[in-house]
Image (cartoon, rainbow, N blue to C red; front, top):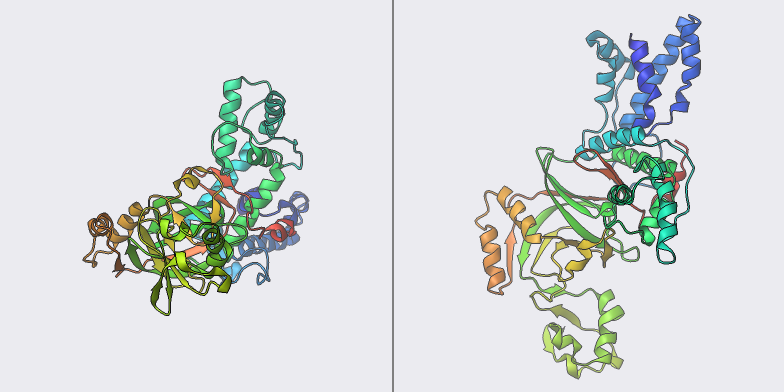
Length: 442
């Protein structure tokens, strides 16, 4: 009975991102059929141990080139785990209990399982071009791709089913669900199911390296453009975010929320001063004043319209608070060497996009006052509330509000996730960090 349970698990090991071929299932079944029980027992026990180690610790031993944090390590005696499972008549349940307990991982694993029930893994693909040239031909070709990806049943479906299937595909690939085949949708349709399986495999592998997060924390996944708040390990808050572009990347990091600033100044980084603002000031001497920028040298205010930029730009730039401020009306600070923080933004249009890598590195949050509400409601010892925040904003008054309950913050980069219904969602590798992992022989 236990052997059959294990064989069934191994036959479906690809639902855990493992290559089924590594377990030599044909040989295992042949040995049992031929009553070679001693060798079969040893082989099954080894497979049990190998499966357990890989779903708990990951499949790559040396990860220093891929991951810069302390690695999650599950150090157990798998033979004792097996013995416990046999005694309790739960050999599979006990084995699977050593997987990461993170909710992101759990949903992703279930999502991959559902994905494999929906599609056939293959290297087959259809090259889809964007609809700019000939939309009719593009949609006809897209039908073949949507069949491959399990979004429609055949390539002769009605137009309404086609658009519905296309929107489903767009949702599953982090794209705006507009039913139109633009460049990003065409590119995503042109990949094979095997490619996306490998992408999910990489994501599961990464989660096996990540040490368990606290029961309460804020998690930002750079690659999926989302901020999520967890309490008691359950998802309680979720917002879209805009992250750094491929040239000005948002770093992965761990920290704790330190304070909130209502109606903040923006102290402009030197790279933006020299790369953008000086050129605009040279072209239009009134630009800085009109956009609320203040210049300081040695702590003394300087009239930006009287600056001779040819003599250099060694000034400190500060933008006044307000709706036109690059940080919007609120920011959230936490200690880190890269000076990254969460903040509002006047550029709301980017939140409507599926792909949101446009910032200089800091993280722009959709509906930041909702995030402030979430933070302050859990900070029960704080005398300030969201009403305090809105008061200072309404009165255009800068105010620093220290957070007593310092929620842990974890920022990571994982290109595949699953939603609350365990529908898997694939995102592009905008920072080009996963090509080696995709090519790794798991």
